[in-house]
Length: 499
Image (cartoon, rainbow, N blue to C red):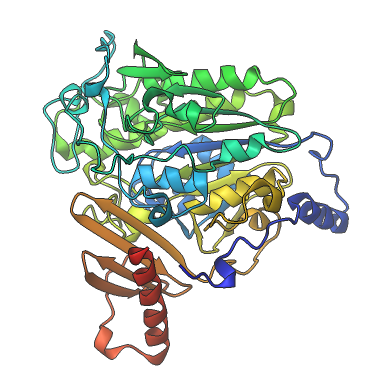
């Protein structure tokens, strides 16, 4: 696929601290992290959460109670035009590799593979609340029955449906630096089947430590199958509390070494439920413990977001202040909100997760850290694939030496936007793509227009004037400006689909 220069990783060797130093010299300030060594990098993923859920994005109604994320937005940089892939596995693969799905082959969500393992059945604790488990199409009889369903057969050529361990992913690159990073992945993984490593996949992919729910989601938030460095056990409690505790413990063990932590919560993914009340501080505490039906799904979904926010607060409070001063925190959603969560207005439940409408691909991205000029909103065109170059630049990696020159990278660093205001977009277009069953959707946009191609059907929008995609433009009567954009975006889609 041919990229124009604005979509190449051109900011390869320039140090973000040189950006910061220039700005601080003008301002007469001292960079507090300058003596702190290589910075730590904490990526936090929310599972199935679009921008409409957070009050800091300013357009959803109602929104979740999220004081921790509100504080991060006030202290850091919030990105408005940030895209993910429409489902979780491709987003995670793109972030870790800096490569689009048509390069890695990871274009759709992976199934569970517990049925092919000697997977011990977990026992829910007495305090567990009733949960509603959904498949992509309907309410399921039970989460346990769903996660233990036989997975699809292997591909005829023996390839994995997951992420190849031959890909150069972030921890492998970070461990190759002159000051190597300690690396961990904690929480949901969702990048493996049993062909590419199975329970050992996170470690074989080059993470030093892994602890979490290996496949897509737990049968229950209160009882789940757990993998820690290849060892499979049955656990109970509350899964995201365990994620938080493991993260605090691992960070505390790192001493002076710089570290990179990929931390992935299960919330607010289904099954819908009432989280433990000590994690709730709003009226959500008064919800019935047993969710009764679909008419109140939204309230329980927002409670799950609130519980995640509380745990993020506990995590950040559990990190020593001196360590936090030298830590970049990157929070994002992996794809849009699930339709079963009854996403807040103005999102349309038919145009969210698993679609390439804005409700499926426009997700929050909030970044804080040393030298970040806080309380800002930035609007560059950006994609989850860009986290790869961004993290490496924050770690001051020389990408010319860290990565093979033969490797095609789609990632464009967003680091400059953290330290300077109102920079022009470094991308002239951004693309999202996904496959779920027989559905194949690709969307690509430029500064003003967006083209969607879904199973061969096209829709074209003036996305700046019509951000909720309510008024598709008639292709037969486009203005000259719109026609130029349409032709260019269509060519990009054709190339992406054909590769």
